[in-house]
Image 1 (tube, helix red, strand yellow):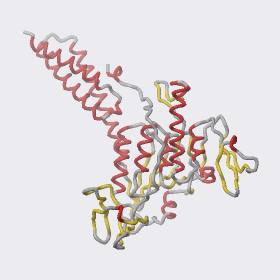
Image 2 (tube, one colour):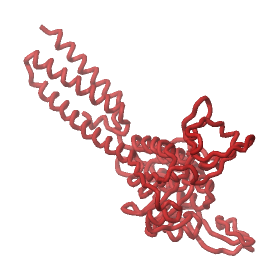
Image 3 (cartoon, rainbow, N blue to C red):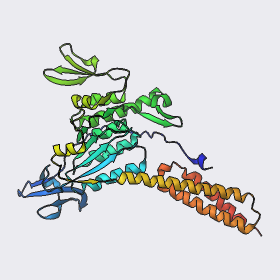
Image 4 (cartoon, one colour):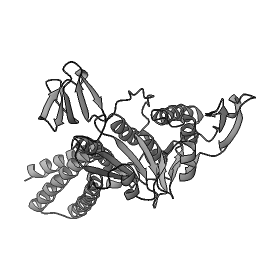
Length: 398
């Protein structure tokens, strides 16, 4: 019965708007335009009467109208720590996405030197990846740095590349990769190409949104948008040419006769996936580091306290406990149903139905609290109503 209520993961297609983001950065030195007063500290996401709460070295916590201050990013006034978040599994869970969004805000409000997101993921759902990207790009009070560390998943694959592009800086370990970001949908037979499942028209429309979104994420931090598009669409070809001493990334059809081809990055028929060396050479990655320690040394943070924020991982484990609890209660219901079929005693039947009612209420609470269980709340409510009706009928019998 419970199995009939479970739904398979499906790709939720949302309207992906091309970002138009301002170039604001983290704020550490504040200079009042009118009085010339200088403060050192960091802005938070907290507000008071429309003003931003800023933690300062000189005056403690203040509510400032930031429009009245010139703001320069630096380490002065920040806490000497780096907060590390990890994306080390697939991006498939709402509970984990929500936890990641919350962790970013909480981490930035602690005033660290920067937030470091260590990435090793095979990708996942577009809608959840987009939420994580939005949370990163909207975080204006703290720098966010991506470190694609490689590992069991190979780096930042598919939706993981989008998250990497959203960060202020993108660094990679020597054995990592980034790319292969085509849109897929998840069916009962596993992941499938969107066009295969929904047809060329629907698939192309969704893919077009995703290509534009990926390119926008890349370009907002000076990375080649065409290469980001080639990671999404295997029909996009990308070459690098030299034009008046400048490197340009263009499609071959747009090449001018006087432009020299410096490199062919993507050929038609395959999704673009870049190794660390290729990502750095193309400008997709800002630098290569063999370890987190080397990265911290480069960013003058080798003596900073390293704080691991594992809130998203805890959320995943919480869901795993909820799944086990759901299965346990479902099994108890099945046993009660079997037992009720052979019960002739009215008191015993009432007891079984009361127990089933309580169990269904428990399942209903779990389903509402954890959408990732993919259980129909409506079907559970119908089952609960049926048990309630059976209990009332049995109670009225003499």
